[in-house]
Amino acid sequence: MVKSSDLKSNATSAVLSGCALGGAWYGLAHTIFSGTAEAIVPAFGAIAIASTVPTFILNRAAHRRFHDTRFSMAQRLDAFDKHACINIVNENDELTEVNEKLLELTGYDRVDLIGQPVTILYEASGSKIALEIRNNLRSGKSWEGETALRHKNGHTVYTQSTIMPLFDRSGNWGGSISVRTDISRTNELISERHTAQTLYELRDDVWIIDSETETFSYMNRIAESRFNINSDDYRKTSFSELAHQRDTSEVLAACRELKVSGKPSTRFETVLMDIPVDVSIKFLPGTDETGRYLILINDISERVAQEKHKSAFISTVSHELRSPLTSIKGAMGLLLSKSAGELPVKAVSLLEIAHRNADRLVLIINDILDLDKISSGEMDFELKDVDLAALVKEVNEANAMLQQRFGVQVEIMGLDVALPFRTDPNRFIQVLTNLLSNAYKFSKPNSTIFIDVADEGAQVRVSVKDEGQGIPAEDQHKLFNRFSDMANSDRALKGGTGLGLNICKAIVENMGGSIEFESTEGIGTTFYFCLPKVALQDAQPALEKQKRQA
Image 1 (cartoon, helix red, strand yellow):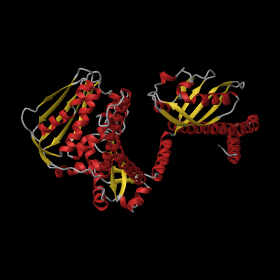
Image 2 (cartoon, one colour):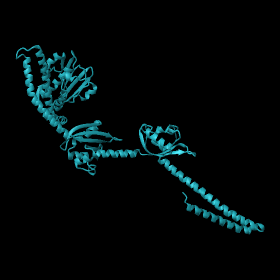
Image 3 (cartoon, helix red, strand yellow):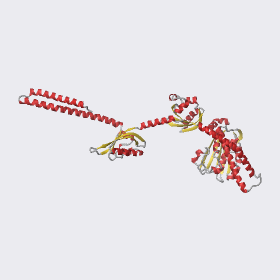
Image 4 (tube, helix red, strand yellow):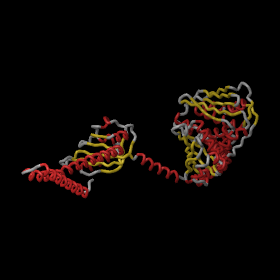
């Protein structure tokens, strides 16, 4: 803007210049003209020059200022255009102009937008704001605020917008101009800051570790407190050093195993610095071959204590119930064997129902006591050299009465020769009996159960196959859980407790083996377990792991 003092100064200079030129002309004309012309021409010429020269000078100055101002304005508009996203809308709310910055931000081409309703730019959730903007503009008011725009590929970009109404010379509303600044990254930074603050205040330990260098990039407040370490120190400490100093080697091993296996996550329970914890590890891949481990550690001391109290209570109650229940069952057995003489037919029928339910109660109590032993790590194993073929035959003979009860045949394979093996015979019988009992319960009448024993060199594989209804695919993942409910389960009618398979898994894994199954709905199920040909102490790592998970 030109100051008034500058204008006065320029006008004064122009007048003085005109007077000077007029005076010069007057002096020069006197030497050129003579006679009447000598009296008239110099005077009129001087007056004309003195009056026109200032006007000419001022016009030239004004023209020069106009071009300077226009050039300066063009520079400013160019900078404005490169910095902000601009669009112009006509009175019908249609886009008539968009700059390159807006096209770059939204991913559209110019032909995608020109002539389209301005709402094409807005997210569906932004219709309310679009209406508010329109009402403001039509009433002659500008609008400022945050707007969510829809990128061509579907994601959302956020802008801080100033939208002004446009009017023609008659004062009629003719549309609007919008000036927007991309604030998506600012919003992301604010969100990341809030997330970081939340993570820092979590009650669970949070670690973030570089998978390539195995160095810490983040620890939240509770983790820093647990290890008595600050951000400056933990960033200088490798995971290996911490594992050695604070006995977190199991977490380190789990991270390395996760990286090798290619699995996205893992979870387990362990003891960290004498505190029982639940550890959840997720591998977060980076843009290159590296990545990060996100580790969440939850203190489960309170839960473990509650479980111990509950387990102790259940164990005590079960022990107290088993003795009288055994006596009741024995007394009913004597009555059914007619030791006290003949009973009425109706009484015998009722007594048989009571005897069967007593059997079921004994089974439940025994299962609960076994679970208690597993959870406390007190399940004993007595290894003996046995003939595995003889054990399998013994289990089959002991369950012969079930063949008649369920109308099912049994075929045994792989027992042509003796199979020397070292195991705990009672635990082996317990596992096989449970699998065989389930096969009986869920087999179709007149079908066949197949028991197969295979010597696979380093291990022995025992399988029980039935021709029953099979297990629904959606339920198979929870089959070894305690009290798991199947979608088509009639366990209550079959007399099961929902604990047997969980106990079988614990026994087999305590002996260093594994148990799996294959099932197809409508065709049947095969359960199989494998036991290594090693002494129990060689399977100690698996046993310790089972104790922690039980």
